[in-house]
Amino acid sequence: MRWPEDRRPRVIAEYPTCEDPRALALDLGVTYRQLLCAAKRYGVRRRNPLTEEEEALVRRMHAEGRYCREIAAALGRALSNAHQIVQRLGLSKPKTTILMSGGQHDAELRQLLADGLSDTDIASTLGCERHTVSKRRKELKLPGNAQGERFRQKQREGTRRQLAAAGCRNLGELRRVSYGRFALENGWPGDLRPRHVQVLNVLAREGVPLSRRQLCEAIGLRTDRGQRSYLASNDREGSYVAHLIGRGLLIALKNTGERPKPSGKGSRRVTTYTLGPEALRILQARALEEATHGEQSDQTGCRVRGAEERGQQHGESVVEAG
Picture 1: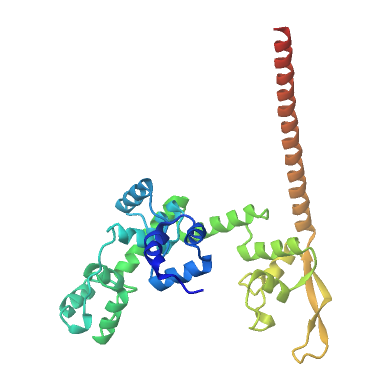
Picture 2: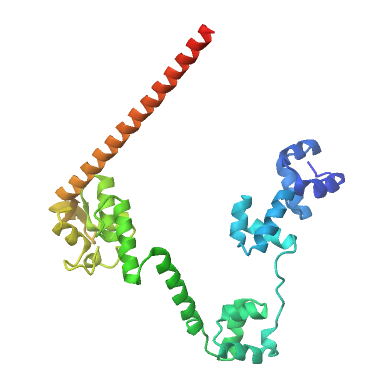
């Protein structure tokens, strides 16, 4: 069936803002696929029109300096659609086209670089793309300031804000607090590092002994650097599993697993690891606490339901007495 050209004006006028394109196709007497092909051929795209409330929200958020990804989340739309909306409302700052290769901005570029600005800051000042600045700077064989004093100053300010928010004195203390919080949130001792916690979580989840290679694969670590690198650490014991074994959280089972040989012929025995008595005790305590909490919740629910039933009975008795 050939597309009837007399329906072109309706497609151009109605398709971009229609709520249901399938209903429009039915009204035009064509299939939904034919409508999509015609819209593509005519160069029209469907978009959900902004309501007055949404437009006011976009203008307010843009005036507050909010990012487009925040606007997209508030509208429930894609990030690309949020960029298009901002441009359509005339809120985006137009980028001026600067021919950096022409040389008319070389003096300003040199001065800004001497002031310690990075390529990103220079691009924002001149109103062009960062790659344009980088390309021209390299053509002039000028050093960049990506790791300059301004960059280090921003890093120091960001670090100070981060430490103040966490209530820590230095980055070492911040790391120790973060590591401890991660371990406690997963139900393990607070002095364990994240890799220790990941190993214990994998073994607790799988419920079967695993080799070091299998542990690495489950955690997402590389296994193409040889066996000596599997779960190696700077612990005093030399590896994460050795540290956990020393604390009674793991047990090594010698020659209980199999691994194919590199030649592909046969396999050889390898050591596997399982949770130790200390880890099992922690899991049992955690399960007992969860069961106790569940019983308390059930008892609370029973008391609430009993109170509701007594209230209903009292209300019925009052009605009957009346």
